[in-house]
Length: 318
Length: 307
Image 1 (cartoon, chains in turn blue, green):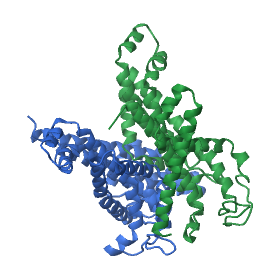
Image 2 (cartoon, helix red, strand yellow):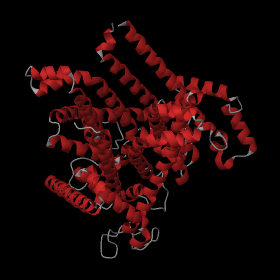
Image 3 (cartoon, rainbow over the protein chains, first blue to last red):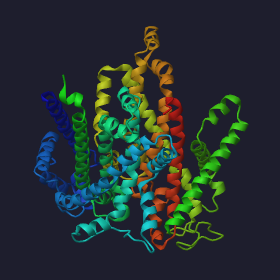
Image 4 (cartoon, rainbow over the protein chains, first blue to last red):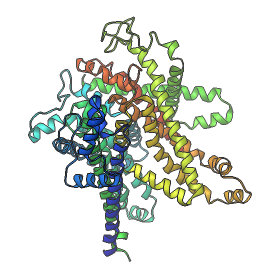
């Protein structure tokens, strides 16, 4: 077991390095602003004196490295600065919405992952039949649909005149669980439809890749039923690529929420980011990008670790 | 709309796709010379349907001014007029003819997506081939830089960069081309890595061929097949990203007609049960599906996979 922990520690260290580099990249974004931060905040009312005063107040007269270190220190303490548009604390803005976005992504994942695994196994079981062809064509089609197209079709079909579900999921107060599940159903369904196809195709491919191996043939010759061959013998060995694909799609869910949140007026991080980009509110965009990028890196890291752990050859060693 | 009506539409669409695909395949096989006909015969119905639609899109994009009944930006009537004889698909939120804007948008959206993909490809494959051929610290530098750029999700990174440079068409093209070229770089480098170690490349080096000639004459021709297939896939991604950005109001700016922003501008009509706003979104979806189907066929052929 020992060398597996070593391997995992190495991966974790690499993840920390990645996060660090991402933070540098996001910090440098402000440096690339034409003019600088102080000018940007003051806008029209920028006189040389006010700009100079604000620069000193923000510490912009310090060298680059000092500023980066203090910025990083602030972030580690949970302080992301203040919004340029309304002066609110960015951490507070994000804090209010982060939960909503995570719940939505989890909601979608809870539907999408079991669904796509089942469909993938079924497609592998009935490969080259009409069901498989149909599932394949449907998957390819749904990958190609823009999220907002799927979302509006669902709105048109399930909401609107005589519909069952609300087309807008903005809730002002804290909703109860059942209310949340009801109001967020359409956005979650949209996200599910967008990611299921890819996961299903990869599950099918990962299983079919193994079907030519000798131990599968052995199991078949023993007279095992096809479903048992696939679930008992092929699936455990196909786990590593499947876990990777699931993690990749969960990471995609986190960024995919941006468009879906805008369509359904869902009060999440994505909407905050889009509003801030059009207002060029740099601190907010930086903060949200940092959260998204962090989640993305963490998910990929988890996938790597899980894929390692699912491989007995690596866990037990020689 | 009832569930059964939806199902009936779905069946009708599937039958339509099969019919068009079959007709086009039979037609092209009949008129093309023998070697080409043999290839075309292997095309699944989905792929041949895809080729018809792509052809139609290209024709519409090129001859947009001749086909469109009105101009792109002219206000010709009241807002949100219903479908009638003059305005075949009604008018939009400012009273511009919907059909004309749909036709012009084919030119704008598809054209911009194509330019962006081409730019990403030139950038990515030149860097990738260079990294693989030269190796050493150039390879290390480029590869690590790409690793860093790929650590941030593409859409989020695009939004971050657009905040810095501001939203305009040129900026969007450059930002997306830069982000997308990292994916092309990975592929080009991986493919070229396998070619660089071949004997004929070694021989060419010993012959004293220069770097540029080595890349363009020895390596590129052998790396072309996977790169071309990738071009189709990347085009779909770029096209969807641009549409998403335009839909968010951060991409192609008004008054230029564009499918993404048309959906956004007319979305209110949806609540009255009017499907007009779905048409531009459908146009995006249809083109992406068709490109994917054709690429799928090509990849399948190239890989020689049977199961």
